[in-house]
Length: 264
Image (tube, rainbow, N blue to C red; front, side, top):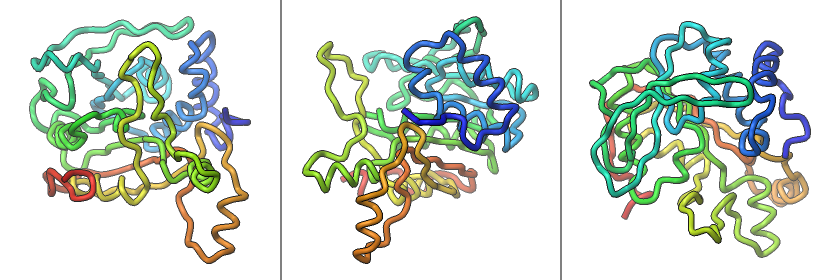
């Protein structure tokens, strides 16, 4: 866990996030730094209009209600693969002492379209979802492109397989993955594909976005020994934070539905 999850976070954002996360469950406590940074980025972008959050937990709508009152957030709930017809419902989320009702689209974003018209949303938020896609991540990104207005903003985060911890694991003879573990309970909630900064840039460009991609350590503090040793040995090592962040603009329709390297 991060030593200081609020390092570099705007003081107003920190105040709201701390308040919303009081009494939060284990998942939100573990992800405090990432959630705070996500809220901070949204605040600094000063987004307004309609946003679609993919895989919402209710946290962002609750925080945005205080930080960005001109932002209307709709969400998605991820459905079972066996049902391919999308539906819409009003879902109530509770986090600590906060609760909020959010209009949600019940979709499987590897199979079914979001039941809205083209270019409905001014922005899309997709945090820690891309790595869970099992068979067709470009279906989701193509659908994000469809529902987002031209010039609209996509904020996406996903773990970085080439983090300082991943590099340290590999040079210690271990797998570099962030969360590829299987569950004893036979749940599906593991990572199926983890990206590098270069890989994420390529995928987003293929999906019709002009992205700015960088990394930050938002899960745990970074490790420096192996990275410094590789740099001293002449390797140009960059983008070694454990979380990839992409701030992208929709600039065209999908360019390449099946980018080479991600698909065969």
